[in-house]
Length: 99
Image (cartoon, rainbow, N blue to C red):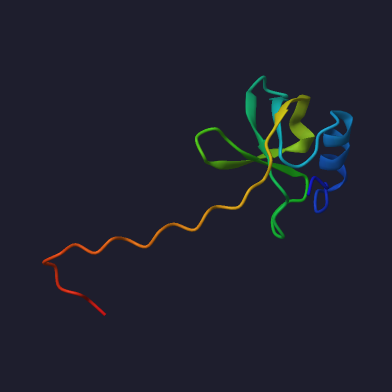
């Protein structure tokens, strides 16, 4: 896990220049001065391969065009995990059972 597989040439070049891997926390400054911080996600199988996919702290995923990246730096790393299965809801006495 950490491969840049699926990212296009422009994206891979930007990511490699910053020593960044998938699941690193990065800060990206675009050419318009906007700074975005998020976790670099693996590339989906669809969409523009030169768009960096980031998970923001608020949980949203966004794309950043690698051709517009002015500066990129690694600020940390998260370890990918699997979501634990949730417990089934508890039954409430007195309510009908629906099948």
